[in-house]
Image (cartoon, rainbow, N blue to C red; front, side, top):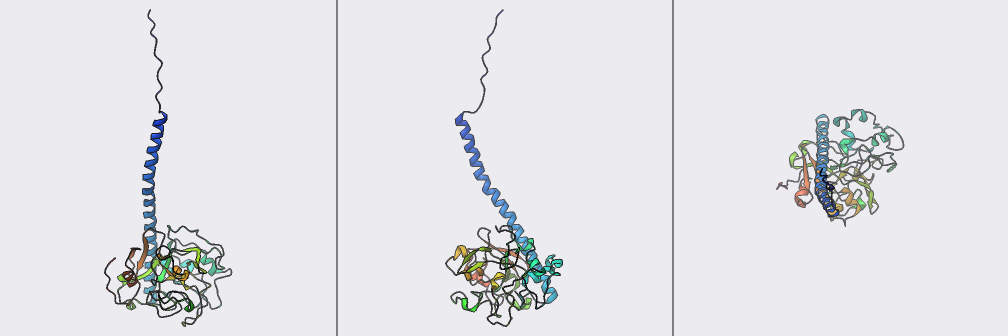
Amino acid sequence: MNIQKTKPRLRSGFTLVELLVVIAIIGVLISLLLPAVQQAREAARRMQCSNNMKQIGLGLHNYHDTHKVFPPGWFNRGHLWSGRILPYIEQKNLYDTLLFGESDNWAPAGPNEDACGTFISAYFCPTMPLPQHYDSFNSIKNRVPMSYLGNSGTLSSADKVKQVNTSYGPLSLQALDQNGVIFGCKGMRFADITDGTSNTIAVGEAQTDPKFGKDGQAVDHWYIGSNQIDPCRCDGSNHGAEFSETVGSAAVKMNARLNDPSVSGHLLELSFGSYHPGGAMFTRCDGSVAFLPDTINFNTYQALFTRNGGEVNQGY
């Protein structure tokens, strides 16, 4: 009887070199995949931001249909354009809690302050890397930052007359005669936008950052109401402050913190911009939404912010 000896079975497995090669390949694949995933996420966030701005545009149109004008940027008691259109962006219940009397303010505690602390997704770009609430910022508790600013035009370079930089713009936001669409105390009509509603910006994004400051000026933007703007006399006098909480100016470049960082903090706060790479979203007066690259020619950029400048839009 022959007894055959069986050879021991060799175990298959990875050598150390093979294992390192596999790990290296996985690392390369991940490095290729992550940017694509991040781009897909940003594309989704940009689409949501565009939807927000479309909703704001529809709110402005519905407000105009009711009142025959666009909402002013603010009123004498600090009520902002973003608060006035609440009933037209499905926030009527919140709007109905607001108090509009002369004796009412935005802080301390009360329904107006509570409204400023109510999160409204349509006013918050999902790309903006900020908390949804800031505790007691400018005396208003749980205040929610705003991603979008009304278009005051191209003339203002500061909130107050004493801060004006005439190299950028001859006016402050205290002036009542701006060349944009949304600014202090005056409501513009469609008929006032002689450059055409498709050629004129109504609202744009801002690179809001309440914790960033320069020259004593924070880049803070808010919605519904402002205790710093209240009271404003609406007579063009040196009264009221921080109008740049709710409107911007094209006197300065888009994304000035990146593209013109040497300018004053007052101009930085007025700058439109965003946390999207390469530019920002804007709502035109006809309700359409466009993404403008921050490489846009500055003259073309400014022309989009004047309602009656007579410029010929060369495209962008």
